[in-house]
Length: 428
Ligand SMILES: [Mn+2]
Image (cartoon, helix red, strand yellow):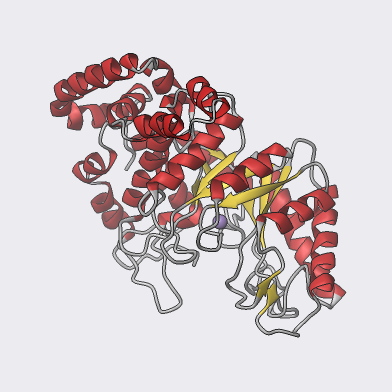
């Protein structure tokens, strides 16, 4: 089943009159605070965030997984689901593949399928954090004790070979970046020397960097712990920056919002990385305790607003052209509903950030007036931007109310009819 603008309009016709009234009201309010609602709407129209191929299936934890129904059985069907999501949001124009969870036999055919759906390919994701026949030579080697950081040069060479194969696949698909998140590190003090592990990873990433095609970027993604429970090789933004600098100019740092220890000032991390020209991209999610992969904006929306404000500042009043991807795990919700909610949350936060009067904020900062600065932030954060975001979606041919419309259109029922109740998407 494909979701079309015509089908969305037919289902949403009863919403039109109220939407028009809400939009007028929001535009009036914005004008009174000196903000051009049209400029906000047009920036939301322009913005796009990649959907990861693994997130259209149900996620799980180490305690188990409760699959949904009608999950995509193949990478092609994952693209079909992303196309349905994009039809509803108008803001998911690309998909991010994960190899070997996605390992197409015929990349040209997969690219043609994506073209047909109006989708492109975003950053490729390699995987050396688990053993898999296609990445570890049918068990001849193992990443149990690391990949790029492994003491055995044969294992390190294999990790590089896998990453190069992922780049080659990405070239065939028209992607322009690879994200490297490593599970390398230690579970036990004394297991390895910190410096040895770091140097080996730096060498591996440098070799990968030097093999990147023109126009490609490599993103280093840090995470403080898990799967390692004592020390990750790339635990924080500082280490990620060191690795990117050692790798070369095509290497940038990726900020996954859940990959920080509690209390980390993520918006400051974003500012620092951008300041030195090494902010490469984002993985959007939210967390309460650790790397919970919850819906972005569902736990700490104010922090997310502040992150969006940094981005708009870096972009000079628009979202900078870096990599954006949703990286969440949908263990209970329908994956497409959760992705639609995540996309909505991202659009809302950007709209709020765009509503901040940045020159007035700068004046209050120069005047050492934190109370006035807080007024500017709160005025934007408390503004109900939902009609502006809905209008942006409508102008993109998408839905005013993505989740309700997804349900009314019966997409999941149609997927179950086609794919069955037992289908399980590949991935975690
Ligand atoms: Mn991530």
